Image (spheres, helix red, strand yellow):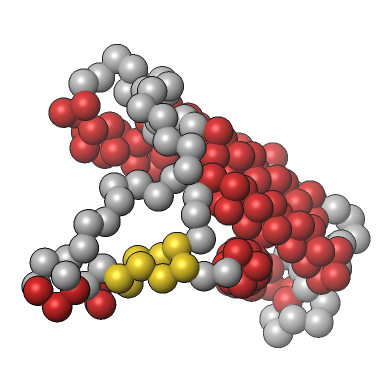
Length: 193
């Protein structure tokens, strides 16, 4: 079939624990035809909550003491740190209100909050935790993300460029790839601030 020009049948969802329930806040009172409006509402809510909370709570964030070994590190003294707590909590609130909740998503949201809290507590501490401690905590979160993903989903990926061919990756390799992706993403985010 691959050479006939007709792509093989692709399963709609690869989630092993599919459920058709609509267990979420706003989706339960809005028709399915309004899904795109809920998406827009979620984005606008997250943006508005972030702007409002940043303006209101910025004064409570820990302050930078200036980085001793960074180029012009003393110039950052007094600037707020740990603002991730504001936009991550706004994101989580938006997800709870506007996205269908399933156990897998709830676990991811909890892991996002845990990752944010480790960064916030590091920023708020008098003495920085150091790269090793923070790196190990981030690695633990990444491992939990991989375990969650492989529990709720299969280890097959779809290759759209090759007529939707399916490729099964060994679970151990898939888990390592997920851990590397999440761990590097968290650390790239940390480096950017």
